[in-house]
Image 1: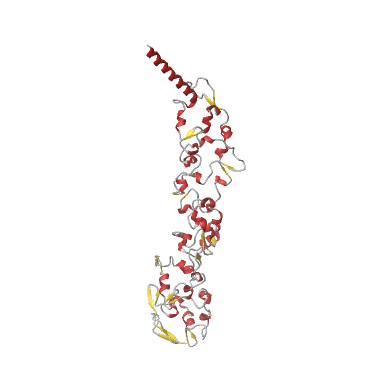
Image 2: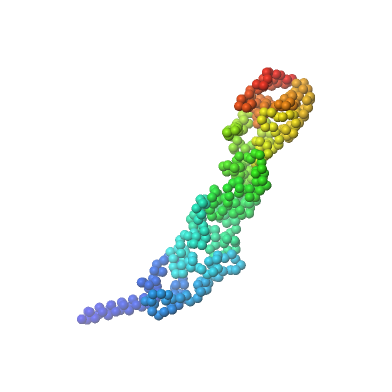
Length: 432
C-alpha cells in the first residue's frame, strides 16, 4: 500500500510539472501551436509573447470553433511597431506601403529566409506581377531561378522599379566583362545610358534578350537609316538576315569610330570570302579575286571598299555609291553615266575623241576608250575590266560575262601598247 501511494504521488508530481511546462509554453505548447517552433526561422516577436499581436476575444479557447483572437492593432501598425515604416521620399513596393506584409512573409515562422512564404522569391512576385510569358522563350537567369531580389529591392529603393542600382551599373554586377568596354575609344551612346534601352531584363522573344528583332531594334534610334532602307533600290542583304547589324558592328563598344568589328576590306572579307548564288545572279568570291590578282584594283588594294560601295543601301545596283551602267552596254559616252569611275579617274578618258594625255588606251592620239563607248552600243567598262583585280595589266579580265557566255579577251600587253582578240572582233593592236 505504501508503494502504491508513493507511485501515485510520483505520477501527480509529473502531472504538475507537465501542466506548469504547458502553461509556460502557452500557445506554443505541443498539440497547440508548437509547430511554429519547428521551423528554421522564427519571428522574434513570438518570444515576447503572442499577446503583443493577438488579443483573446472569447474565454473558451480552444474549444470554440471560430475567431477567438483578433489583432491588437491594424496589421501595418503592428509590423511598423518594430520595423521601419515606408519612406515617402523613396520608391516603395505597394505591398510594403499598404502594410500587407503577410502577403510575402509568415508572421510566425518559416523554413525560408526572412520568414518568406516561399523559398522561390519569383513565386511570391508572380502572385501580383505577370512574369511568365510563353511567347518569350529567352529568359534572364535571375528570372528563371526566381531570384527577383538579385536586381530589385523588396521594400523600397531610391531607383525606379525598386532597382538596387541604376543600369548599367546594376547589370555590371553580374556581367563584369562588359564594364571594361566603357573604357574603349568608341562607346555606343545607348550603352552609356541604360542597358534596358535595348534589352528586356526579364524575358524576350529574341536572342540576348533584345527588345526587338534586328534591324528593327537599331532603327528605333537610327531612323534616318531606316528611311533610306525603305526607299532604296538595293539593300545590303546582310541587314535582313543572320545577325543583321551586329554582323559588322559591335553593339556596345569598339576600337573604331563607327563600332565596326574590323576596318576596311578585312571587314568585308568576313562575308565576301565565298561565292553566293541567287536565282538571278552569282556574286563572286571577292576575297579570292583580290588576293590572287597580280594587278588588284588600287581602290581595293588600299582596303577602301566604301570608296565604291555604300555599306547599307543604295539607289544603284551592287550598293555602288555613284552612278554606273548596269549590263554590257553603256548607252553613250556621257561621263555622268560613269560618275563612280570618275571619282578617281579623269573623265577626259571618255569625253575626248583624240588625246595624248587623258588615257594610255590610244592608238597614237586616237582615244580607244572613246571609240568603244561613244556609239549607240557603247561598251561598259566591265566588258574589258575586272573591277576588283586581274592577272593582266590594267585589270583586263581573262574572260567577261556576255549573257551566259564567258567571252575570252585574249589581251596581251606590248611595250608601247597592246593587243586583244575578243569574241566581238578579231585580233587588233594599238600603239601609243
